[in-house]
Length: 391
Image (tube, rainbow, N blue to C red):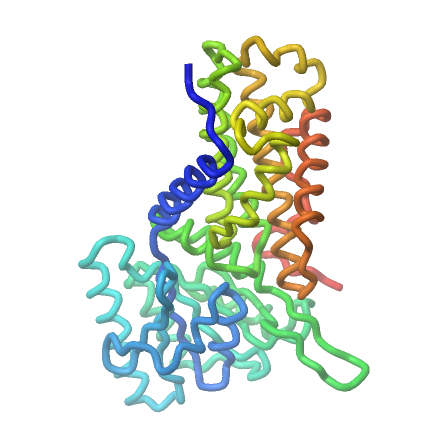
């Protein structure tokens, strides 16, 4: 029979699981190419949680190419000098980029250049022959390239966009973006758009070693974080079902809570949130109920089971595999939905109180547990990868 544990014990287990999850996020390296003034820094800062392009001059890694990163951040951005289309300069930069990619390829896969964002200002309405030739040369480098059309004012496909598509350039995708809202006049502001599509397209091209790091640090596509977190939930649901397959004597409920604690820690890491003892404590207390400070393991499972229709009679008996899987899935889905709402509120400058978040967690859990729903709530339908929304 397993001993139960206090809230402090569970917080320590949560912290250990969180640190282990952080060590397994991998590394993602993005190479950004484009002319001066194309908006590379704005693009980088709007995509990633940490404003990497504000770290000063960056660390030189080869002549003219600098690496931007921050401590404890698993993202590295490699930035080329602004392309002024001087033939000699372009030649030097091409050679340096090729050398960087080849040198990194000799190292561990997490050190490779994983994707290239080649940026062109949409307003320029043209692609230079020297740029077109360079894109063709990049084919032999075996690194996926996304052509990013920066400062694209309209979501509607432009003639320039259509022209680029018809050129059959050797790029994985062409993504028009407006990284930040742009005020045209006092009556009209162009809304930011396209970053979520850029993030999704990039994720699809990344090797496994870079995917979790990228998802963790990007803030432009919350749905992508939720999708990855859901995959972890399904794995923990399978683990909890195995735990309950014996079935588990109710006194051994803390074993199940340990599995759920690791699940919550991994979800927290994927959303790029720090380990906040107050936040995690509030979440755990909300589901352990009154008196849950000294017997958190059994209290959490007791309260979760009570919210599953027809399962309340199991308390004091045994937890079946199906019941263990049901409450783990409902808890995981509810926690993801809470973090989705929390992150969106933070990005929009509308912070939510802990009491609001804990109530949301309990309400969502009840909804998932009672309805039997096994999927996340969709924010909105996703368009096909190459399709542009038309307003």
